[in-house]
Length: 78
Image 1 (cartoon, one colour):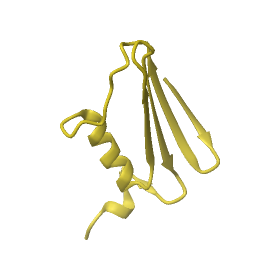
Image 2 (cartoon, rainbow, N blue to C red):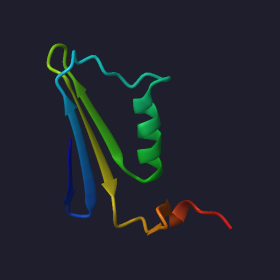
Image 3 (cartoon, rainbow, N blue to C red):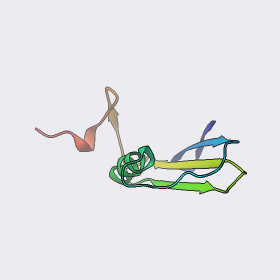
Image 4 (cartoon, helix red, strand yellow):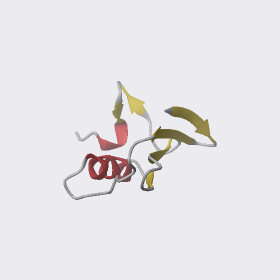
């Protein structure tokens, strides 16, 4: 796992050496992650090759969001 800043983005990359069969299935956890990233204006990339493991890359734009107490201030309602 690696986390770093690039321009105004937070980049999170998780790689494993498993069997490489990850998919964005409707009932899977990756879809939930994709939904959360969509709300933040981010992106999700999943590369999963048979017998070569899986890499999940999440890109989150930081400039568009101000976190207040760990909560995205743009998502708060009055």
